[in-house]
Structure formats: structure tokens, C-alpha cells
Length: 215
Image (tube, rainbow, N blue to C red; front, side):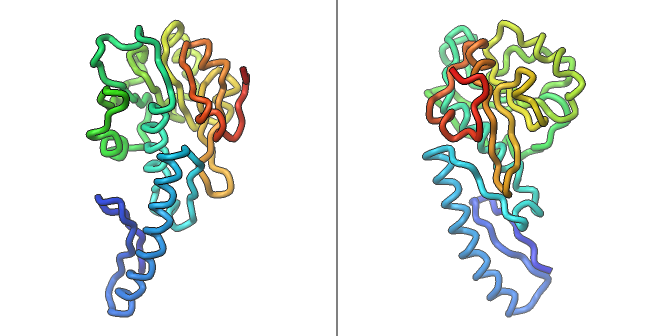
């Protein structure tokens, strides 16, 4: 049985239970997927475009590698007020609250990364933790019943809120992931970001599926 895997170098390749014919198949699959993988990464880094998820990639749970990459790249298209940082060299913190769908993926994604001279760090929060020190807060599906409490805890802070909960941007969240036609897309609630003094780049707004509460 062939399995698509993702190596530490970013190369997608096929692994099999044996046979020279399957090694030839591996080379064909590798060539095909490397091209798609590199193209998708360039699109994401240069234009923050939507990311294609084929059935094969979905089967290997690469969805959260894609979403982790988006979380990192959002930080490059957002300006926070100076007061959001405890010190001039304080890191940008991406937090996950509730059940963590990323595992080690998010840590690997941000490892060694910096944005505007600030290191990027990943943190996990227990539901009772204060999320105000987070610059990006991914709110897990497990916290659907606690959104009001989380939003109340964030009131007056400049935290970019992100979730894959359906309807998240309609209840005050800022960025909502969705899967459409096999691609990771997102909605933006610009009014919620403005209210928190989180300035979103026009480039980010342009690639959103929909901007709600447009300026």
C-alpha cells in the first residue's frame, strides 16, 4: 500500500510495502508532488493565496501543516500596537487554547522564525489561562461553549483571534478557517480587528474569501 509522507526537508514522497515497480512509482509521485508543494509554498509566502488540499494530502492530515503555516504567515501581515509587547524585543506569541489539533506541527513551523526582528513562539493554554499575552490566539473547536468567556478575557487587548469554528467571524472572531473545494480558505471580520487595534494588511484582506464588517 502506498503512503504519501512529508519529510523534514519539505518534500512529499511515497512509501510502499515493497517492489522495484513501486520504487518507480515513488519517483513519479515525488516529482508530481514536489512541484505542487513548492508551488503552494511560493503562493502562500508571496501572496498568502489559498492552499489546495487534494484527497491524498487530506488523508495524511497535512491540513494542520497548512493551517500552522497560515498562522505563522498571518503575523507578517498584521501590525500590533507597541503596547501589545512587554519589551522592544519581546517575541510574537502564537497560542492555542483548548484541544490542540496541531501537536508538534506548530512548534516545527515557527522554529527559528522571526518577523520584523521579533522571534515567533508557540504556546498552549489551558482553558482557564489568561490569553491576553498572546498575539495570535487559535481557539480550538473544543472551546465552542466558552467563546463568550474567552472574548471577555480578551476585551481591551490586541490579540488576533483565529478559529475553524463555523460562524466564528459572525460572533466576534477575526479570522475563520474553512475548507472549500479542497482548499484552505478564510473569512475575516475586519470590524473585530479594528476594535482590538489589530491592523490587517490590505494584502491579507484581498485574499480572504469574504471580509465581514468591511471598513
